[in-house]
Length: 218
Image (cartoon, rainbow, N blue to C red; front, side):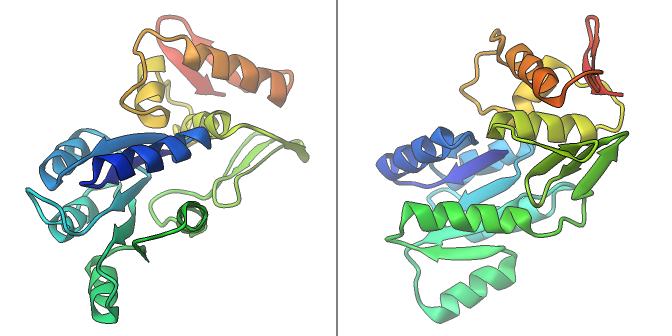
C-alpha cells in the first residue's frame, strides 16, 4: 500500500512516516500543496493523509484535484481545524475521514486500515485466479482454501499482480506501486518478495517470471 503524507510540519511528517513504514507501508512526503499536486500527477496512491492548512496550495484544492484522478486515493484529512462545521466541510469536499491534531498514532493507523477496508467501486475487492483468492478489503489470502499469512509488502505485491489480470508487471512498476520514493531502483527487493511469495503460496507457483519483462499471475 502506497501513501502520500501531505504535512507542512517536517518533524511531524517524519515521525508519522517512520511509524507507517515500520508497519510495511510505502510513504511519500509532501511538505506543501504544490509538491503534493506534483506527486499526485505522477504516482498513484492508495491513501493520502492530508493537512488542510497547507502553504502553496490549500489542502482543500489538493483534495479536489486528487478526486478527479481515474484512480483517486482514499483521503484522510489530518488537521488542527477541529470545529464541527470545518469537519463537515472537509467531508463534503470528498475526504473519507477526518482526524484532528493532536492525535494518537494508533488511532491514525486504525483509521487508515478502516478506510482501506471499505468497498472500492473502482476495483474488485475480492479477486480469484484459479485456486488463489485475494480479499483486498479483509487483507486475506487463501489458496485451495488454505489461509496464507503474508507480510504487508508481500500482500500488496500480490494484489498488484492479481489485479493486473494476466498482464506483465515489471520490477520497476512494482517498485513504483508498492515501495515509496526512497526505494533504490537497483535493489533486488522485488525479486526477494516474489521468491517469498512463491514459497508461501506453494507449488505450482501461480507467479510466472517473464524473461526481460517482469512477473504475472497465470
